[in-house]
Length: 499
Ligand code: NAD
Image (cartoon, rainbow, N blue to C red; front, side):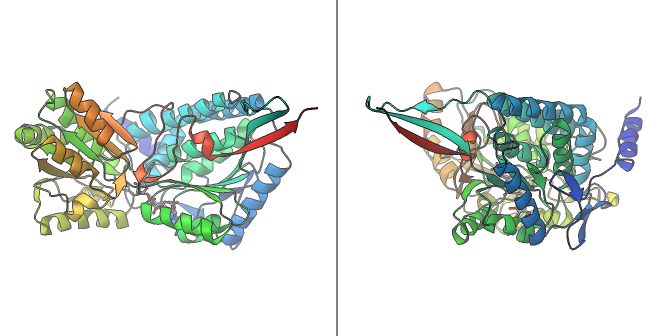
């Protein structure tokens, strides 16, 4: 079958998708109480793919009440962990069985290439659900080493009702990273997906109930951040709010907690991650290829985007030559074409914001070495060329602010110390990478980098066993691994006096 036929098949499937567009509360789909809806516009071509329920405070109240009732009567929270495991495994199985539908929803909704949705987003979601399902019946409590007259147990209990507020760059994965550990621990959950990408979360919730998750345990309230997201953050009956998104909104969640019931807050926020390539790196081609993928994969819409490339002067020219070659492999194309490596940005507003940073970089004196413009304008969609600025200094706005698009800043340094200083000179501390063959330098520099995740001679290595999250204004707490379960549980000590 020719490529255009395959592309046509995905388009046809897209045209016949049965899209869930109501809120999901208490195990069923429902309109917003005031009947309001908002247009869900695909950045692929500017078409409206669905009119989605626009939840407001009253809908959030309904969802929280339903979650609370489910939590208190123990229909999930008091099920044996092995039973929770079985249901979550069935859920993962159903997600896997609906891989093509979910991948298509993701691509239509936020513009990423269908090949990425199929090979990255759906499998990662399934892996995450399975991993926490398996963990559910393997978490033990402790007995404290007290004296002989008492027995003190230390156990973990679910928090209760948990709010999950997520962004649009990996809508399903970000949702799974939070709901999987929260559900495995026995919580009830209310999810507020990003207004740009509400579709996959709605379908996930439906599949969860089909797998046997009791009604009310997982609710989804699509709507806008300042209304539905804020209502969750301020809600007096929500025990914890777990957020992934911008640092600016993350700070609001800390305020919401302070203004309401001191609910627990977990934050996975922005980044301005540095990739350092030192003169002691012999495989410059691998480093340059990785640098390109670290900024252009997912259209640069990645919290961990390696958006600052810090290069030691002696290898600058060799790195640039290779970088431009590898970057050329990322050309915006139709996201429904399986051959496409770079899709559309999430929406028009974000596209304009990303392009405004190209103007800012030029004005601040950086040299545009590649791209810098809009692409595929005839499609009606939101496409930006892979763009690289050379001659950037770390005080420029393009080196300090998160652009969240395919724009790379190359900063040249003279020494290892200067590379570390530049990498650490940021409000953020999500990820950092280091390319070098010198094992002494590698160990010393990795220790000095102020980032939650340090990659040595690689980038964006990924496994469910490893915590994910950042230092400084990149967040508070960690997703993934067993550490994530700490966020969704309370620690209880119980003292028993022995006679
Ligand atoms: P955003 O902060 O604008 O929105 C994230 C979520 O918060 C959305 O659901 C949105 O509706 C909601 N929201 C917005 N305003 C709100 C308000 N006033 N009150 C309550 N909720 C509100 O972020 P975005 O543009 O959707 O996503 C991009 C950001 O996400 C980037 O900064 C990126 O770095 C970050 N991100 C971080 C990670 C991580 O794990 N560290 C992962 C992915 C994305």
